[in-house]
Every structure is written in C-alpha cells, then in structure tokens.
Amino acid sequence: MEQTIYGLSNQAYHHEAPYSEYLSSSQLKNYLKSPRYAKFALDNPVEEKSDALRFGSLFHDCMAALAESKGDWQRGYAEWKYRLAIFDPPINPKTGAYYGATTKAYTEAYDKFLSDNQDKTIAHVLEVDLAGDMAHSLLNGCGATSEQVRKLLRWAKATEVSYFYETEDGVKLKVRPDLLTSGNKGTPGKIVDWKTCSLDSLDEDSIARQIIKYRYDVSLSMYQYVLHAIEGKWYTPILVFAQKQEPFDVVMCDISEWCYTYDPDEDFVKPGVGAMGFRRLLDLHTECVKNNEWPGAESAIEADGNTRIMKPAVPYWLGMRYFEEF
Image (cartoon, rainbow, N blue to C red; front, side, top):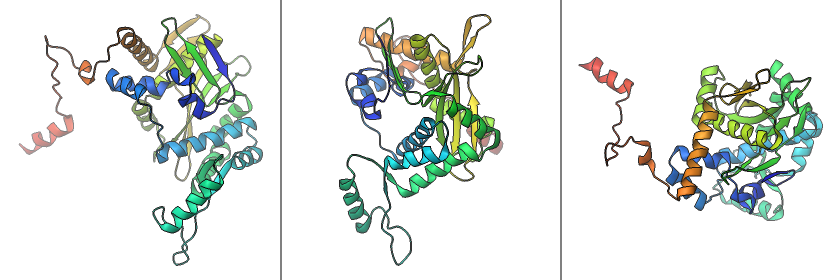
C-alpha cells in the first residue's frame, strides 16, 4: 500500500491510528540498541517533550513557513509568527530580567497563558527570537550557502508531506521529509533535512561525528528508499546544519556517499554505509516480527557455544595512561 498525504498534522503522523501503525526512521533506529528495546518502545510510545526537541520542532515550523513563501523572508517569517502563541514572561522589577520558570509569578502567568491559547502552538519569546535569528542567518547571512538555501526554497515542491509505504513483507514504513525539491534543468530532486546543532565548529570531522552519533545517514536512506518505492525516483539527500548560538553559521551537506547514490548513465544504485545500515535494521525488524522474537542487548555479543559474554576492550587512551606511568 502506498499513500501520500498533504497537511497531516505532526500529532496525527506520530500518534494517531492508522498512521501510528507505520514505522518511522527513529523507531527503526531503536534496533541499534536492541530488538528488545525497539519492541518495548513500540509497545510503550512516549511523546518526548525535551527542550531540544521542542525547539527543533519550532525551527522546523519556521523553515516550513519560509518554504511555503518560496523563500520570501518577510512573508514567511510573519506567517510563522502568526501561527504561534508567544509567551512573554513577567519581568522582575528588581533585576530587570524575566522571572525564573520556578517562581510563582512565572507559573501563574504561564498557566493563564496556556488556558487562553489552548489551540495554538506555545512558544517562549526567547525561543522564537533564537529560531528567527537562525532562520534569518540561514537565508541571508551565510554567503553561497544562503544562496543555495534560497534556491532550495524556491524549487520546493513539498514541505513536510507524509509518505506511507508497505513493503512486500508487510512492513509498514513512514517518512516525513522537511523539504523536497523537484530538481532543476535535469538535476535530481533533493530531500532536505534541517538540523539544529550546538557545535562550535562546523568542520567536516565535526559534521561526520554528528551524522554518526544520530545516524542521520540511516534516516535519509530510509527517506530515499520509501520515496523511490512510491515515486520511482532517487532523491539526493541533503543535510543543512544550523548553529543554535552566535554567529549562527550554517553548512549544507550532500551525504549521497553515505546513503543511496544513483548513476543514471549506468542505471545503477550504489548503497553507502547508511543505506546498508538501513537495510540491516529493516531486515532485523522484519525477522523479529515474523518470528515474534525480540532478543536483547546480548544479541550483539558473539556466541561462544551456549554463552554470550562481553569482553570490553580497554580504551586506548586509558591503557596509554598507565603505560606511561610504568
């Protein structure tokens, strides 16, 4: 079964039937910990509400509004803020600063604000200012990268559209790219994912570590896979990293070598480490569902007869510390 839905809310995509029956890339990546953990997470879904996730969602909403305006900063930014209920906390007259979140003045003001804006997205004024500064830098302050971002927004054919696909083995998958472009002058379309980060340096090594840490390559490979199954096209995977602190610098990354790379001349698709990782996790999920068996963390330990005993290696840096002493 294949389905493409425009305008589906984030809440419905993640938590409401029948869409909650489909596996997202985040849920699939839980198998990196263990099938047992992945199964537990599927059976006990929890809506994460960390500050980092909330701010990331806020920034993504800003970029979605800018995509809808085709990169028109004034119109897109105004539309984004119009959709928000922005909480401006009371100020302590003694310090001239906002009351702290644990103070009575803050909590009373916040509770009233929530009751007055129950149907809107709530955002703190400082978070709104930060997300706006980041988005403005992304579009206007980062030289050639900003020019490239503006082109992506102008070429956008869809933003945050939900795609649902069922494999031949009956596994239900879902993806929700931040932005899709239809390509230009014969070039392939692009899957774009906006990433906020706290990196001091956006050098190649730091970016590579971020990709590995969060396995963005697995997620983008799954996006490519599902979109190809539905549309018959191989999209180029693009990550855009934006700093959450000044100077709000930005880098754009083509991670095709990590994911699926399509050669139109040879009509050949080459899988990178992320694509191979995605297929391994998908096969593992398929096998676990088929056999109704969900092994724990011990499954990552090579069996020795009937035993599985981990033998952690001594970290090189720790060994060298004592080698130098003796």
